[in-house]
Image 1 (cartoon, one colour):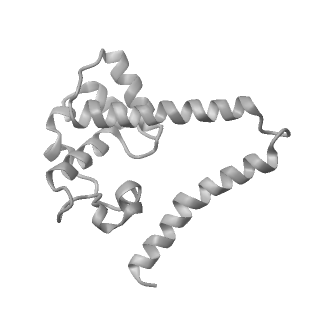
Image 2 (tube, rainbow, N blue to C red):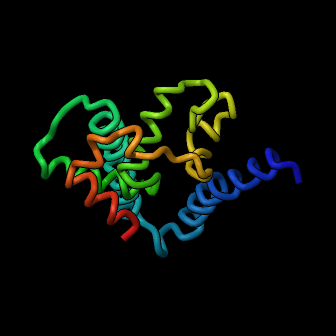
Length: 153
């Protein structure tokens, strides 16, 4: 199978199938094992985790848009980690690399390689940037290092 075709098949299996399976499971199990409180919990966690990525990983770490209290920083980074998009250090380094090489050779999640690659596909490739090269300041931050080292625990 051609590598691009294989890549698209893997993306379909990893991204689309779990989403559709979740929707189907909710439909089939409604009122027996899934109820409104479960959907409320799903929506709440989804929103909090999305904030962890967009505010914590992206705005706080990558763009240095603000400097929160250490407890707020820890909470945002833990929520970002729950997205399973990578550790805080690897995510920030990869996104900083993306800005350094936007839409050119070296961009780890270029839209030129397609919609799925730009939004999620890059997570499944070995294209993570070196934090020591792209975000040395974060490598020295004890909270960022702690959350990154305990990623997936």
